[in-house]
Every structure is written in C-alpha cells, then in structure tokens.
Amino acid sequence: MSGYFDQTVWVLGAGQLGAMLSHAAYPLGVNVNPVDIDAQTLPQPGKNDIVTAEREQWPETPVTNILAAHQNFANKNFFATIADRFQQKSLLDKLSLATAPWQLVCDETNESQLHQKLGERVLLKRRMGGYDGRGQHWLKQAENSQIPNDWHNNAIAEKAIAFDEEISLIGVRDKNGQCYFYPLTLNLHQNGILTASVSPLERLNKYQPVAEKMLTTLMDAVEYVGVMAMECFRVGDDILINEIAPRVHNSGHWTQAGSNISQFESHIRCVTGLPMIQPSVRNKNFMINLIGCDLDARWLAVEGSELFWYQKEVRPGRKVGHINFSKTGEKNIRTALEQMEPLLPERYQETIAWLTKELLG
Ligand code: ADP
Ligand code: MG
Image 1: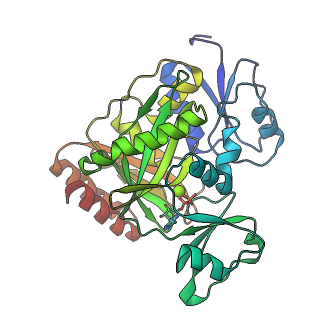
Image 2 (image 1 turned 30 degrees about the horizontal axis):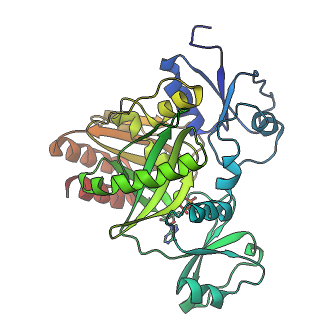
C-alpha cells in the first residue's frame, strides 16, 4: 500500500456519484471502490475499511446487506431517517428548521381536508424512492384531483410554495464536528430535474449565514460526517428547506471546476479522517446537466468546458453527464454560453437563457 493507510472506502452504489468520488480520491492516495448493489461478486470489506453511500435508499441485496452491516458505515443510522420523507420532515420540524407546511397522508386523509389545511394546490410526494421529480402528484382543488389509491400511508402532502427561486447549500462536517460550506448555489429545475446551477452569486451572499446555521443545526444534531446537501426555496427573504440529501449532490458538481477541494474530495477527506480545510472557491461557476442527450465531441471544443460523461445508456429524462465551466469576465462567459447553445437539444434554449440572465443579466 502506498497511501496513508490500508483502508479502502467502499461506496454503496456504482453510479456517477460513486465514480466521481473515486476520481476525486485518486490524487489523495485513497482507494475508493464503488459497488453495484446487484453485483454478483460480493464485496469483502476489511474490518477497518470505511463504507459510504451514493444513494439514500437501497433494496436489500447480498451486496447492500454486507455493506450496510459494516461497523464503519459513515452516518449509517441517518439514511433511514432521510430516505423516508415523513421521518425527514418530522426531524426538521423537531429541530425547528423551516420547511413547506405538510402532513402525512394517512388512511383517513381526504382531498378536502388537505385543501383546507394546505391550500388549493397540494403536492403529494411518495415517502420513499422519489427522485428527479418522480414520485410526485399534484392535487388541484379546481380540477378536483384525487389522491391515488395506494398513496395513503405512502405519501406526505405539502403546501405548494410560490418560491422566488431554488437554492442549495453543500455543507461538510468533519470528524471533529467542524463544519465547512461552499457558497450557495442557484438551481434551475425543469420538469422536476436539475438542469443548471450557478455559484457563487453575490446577490445570494445575504442568505449564506442563515442557510449555514440551518444546515449546521441538522448536521450537529445527527453528528454527521461528510457532505450533506440542503435544497431550499427562497421566498422573499425567507429560506425554507425543501429536502436534504445525505451525500454528494448534483447541485455541487460545479465544485469540481470552481474549488480547490470539490464536494467529492471533501466527502472522502471527512469519512477517512484526513485533514479538512475550508475549500476556496474561484471564479463564476456554472454547470449544465446533460439529460437524455447523446455524447457530442464538439462540447470539448468549447473554451473552458469540463465534461463528465457518466457512461450510461442514454434515455429520455435520464442524467447522462454534466459540463462545468469556471470563468471570469462577462465576455468569456457569454462566449461559452453562445458556443454551447447550438450543441445542445432545442429544449436547452430556456436553460441557456436562464444562465445568461443569472450570470450576465
Ligand atoms: P426530488 O428532487 O427528490 O424529485 P423534490 O422534493 O426536490 O424531489 O421535488 C422536485 C422539485 O419539485 C423541486 O426541486 C421543486 O422544483 C418542486 N417542488 C417540490 N416541492 C414543492 C412544493 N412544496 N411547492 C412547489 N414546488 C415544489
Ligand atoms: Mg430535490
């Protein structure tokens, strides 16, 4: 072994997040081993190895049974809480952290009660397993929409939030309980999927302290170690938590280009107990998610582009890669956006227009 220690970090799940954790750990001399939950060859973690996860929920398989039972599974007990929206919202309430008003959809819950309590538009969210806007169902009083049959006990109901914008905070907590934060990220979701992010933005600075305080409260309460992401709605000057991810997060991918320590490296440093320092962020950074598009070598010719292709089969609505940019100067930013636009499907015109407005507007 040529690293600091002979520990391997095993990642439960072998998607793009696991791949990017490996990629970030390599120059640190840390060995990371993402494992597909359905892998035929079973992992054999050593007693002193470390386990982390790239997903908050998993079915029981031979692989997940082995990894989840490991004594050094970072934040092990927290996953079950976060994976169930009912438990997640209950914890946020208990810690007096503001979220969208909500209630559990139980056997007796009916549509009119929900509208009475939560307003004309109510968003039902499956307790488990939803992602990228899947597992959601809108109840609109004007349309007399109904709670789907098997959603009783399996969903929560949230008030529709007329937010000004969606922002997120990527936080890091090390083994000594010290917290570190990246600047707030502004996010664009289209059809429930994150399409683009920007950070830092000067106008968001005033929300940074309150957001950091909220995430610190949560991370301290559960003695978290590693990277945690907090998705928020900004409503006027108020910040409401939308949801929490106990892992590296898509809205932090820009840190690969815009920070000396990416979110992936931060997570690896913390779970292994390596020294952590405050990440230093440079330039204006933006990320474009590649959703359902074919790989295109012309992206590589755009000045300053940093492509991450996930090597997944391309399907409509599926995240298959992202491109980061870390830039200074309006002219450089404009040039990159203008060069990117014709290289993406037509539906990205709205995305590029949003980035242009937020970065240059
Ligand atoms: P996931 O990201 O796991 O699919 P979210 O709870 O983050 O689930 O919801 C996805 C998107 O749906 C959010 O980013 C936001 O755009 C929208 N959304 C979620 N909750 C609400 C709400 N209470 N009111 C309005 N829009 C919402
Ligand atoms: Mg979300």
